[in-house]
Length: 552
Ligand SMILES: [Zn+2]
Image 1 (tube, rainbow, N blue to C red):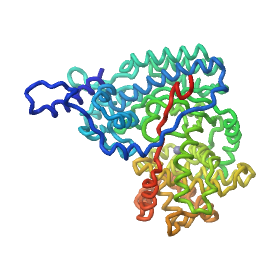
Image 2: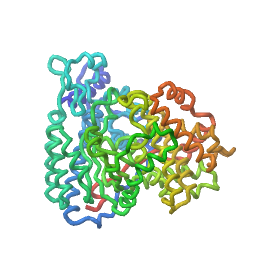
Image 3: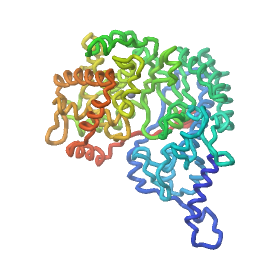
């Protein structure tokens, strides 16, 4: 298999370098020991939490399904290693220090994902942009000249054939051994499923893993409504392919639905058309009709594997990605409640204590964080997808490299705008309105720490500078920030208007101006961010997870 050869090539390369001057043939084990750079410091960016939930709500059969799903998830983990790096075992064999081993596992390879992929193992160079989806020596030009319409597919890798020519290999062939095993596990789990929707989905997903056609199983996933257990599995997101964003990476989430919180969420779906109409923009910028068929659900995650377990961890997802399925059926938005709570407790609360004016820290609340995150996801579905003056062009294709930062910025700000709107209608009254605003501001500091390589990081930094300019937040001399609620309300409406205008007009020049002017970290902000790091506040989470943690 390709990945093994790549692994061998890497080891061989290091081996050759290590024993250049030695005529005798030393064993590889003696010669190659990888050492980590600044491992303690890098590790401190993560806080470890246990992934757990109340399993007593499950039936005996549902509990019996979990081991199969966990095992299938572990296969997705194995596949993601192959996609991100190559042969895991081959690499791990030559790392002796326990902490370095753990950090390599967290990163699925020798590159630090929270430090712009810095190669933290001595002997490794920068990460190939196309990860292991393409031959490491392939240039963009060679790919463009490669004449095979399948080459841009989501579910195949590009390898070299015997004559060193590029060749397309579908995932179900490249990874056939692992996928056969995973597929069997899904079928076993399906025999235990009491919910007919879940049974059908697992059966179709098992089939899809073996033929790379996910359409039917995506539809079945959206049709399933009464299940308590959910299993998101397969090749899904395309961020790991930093070269072209074509290839999807394997991942899995094992989820248990929180029915009480889900009901709370379902209630807000009906407000979507009204919310779209309430947006503070000219009618032309809100004429699109959002679907109300989509679902909002809350879950506890009991297992993350593969892509979603690498680097910063997801707290809300919106699937499926297939635009054909989205158009036909909409999407399901999943709020991952226990992970969200862990980020709130271990990251957001400590940040607020250092960064929010003492008179406002008590306003930071989990309810507000959960609600703001939920409306962020909802807001992705509102606003504008096609240009006002040219309904055939998507905003995405007009704004190009600026698009994702503005789309994330839009979701944040419209989300907050909707919270304000619903609050004034008498909804969301469990906590004061100020709580949503102050929690939002504290969370901005959390996201700015993801750095400028993340769209969320960019969006939050630009908005931070905008809020300072509008005096919606003011910095005290001691480096804490006070939220001015009245000015904040005005700034939220004004910023919503500005972002929707940039999107609706496809105004790339204005988007660039925003980047040039507002993607800056002032000296005082730098000081404040350093204060957070020196206080040992983690940037993200890692998980202790699996059968033992769950007591299975
Ligand atoms: Zn988003």
